[in-house]
Image (cartoon, rainbow, N blue to C red; front, side, top):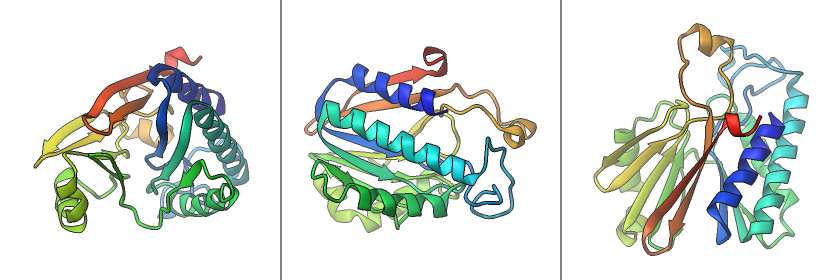
Length: 227
């Protein structure tokens, strides 16, 4: 898992080229479980795990640090945005606080706070909003964003909402905002396979945004390129 995740990030950095700022976006559920019992945040669903919870945390920290190092070699500044998922809400919050402390003396790294499940960033004329997507349909998210982020909405020509959760690639435009979900690298676990959640291609994506023109490039790397 560490090898293919870091390998995907390395290939996507090479494909997208250097730019002023690199945003490393974790759309949630980076950790499969949220506690020593290896259940999701609700405590109701037991997850397949390789090793114990501590092994997972150690692997996640290594992936974050290695990936940030790779991004720092290609960009003048790196922003880390960690979205809290329904599998790892508590772990993601703790990891966020830890990484903020770790990089507090590195002026080129900004770790955005993830206390709120909605996060946003304004980049030139782009408004980028994120949410894991659990219990949050695009229409409901659109209504929240227009109301809660009205100032940023009015100031930006290009508006995007990036979501995870479903592990499938979708796009829909609502009222001037493009809502996108993405495929994910991991294979299905036992619960998802038994429940019929199969068929999505295993990929990771990178998007290039121009300050003036919005999204200008999109790159994708598949699991077959990382074996």
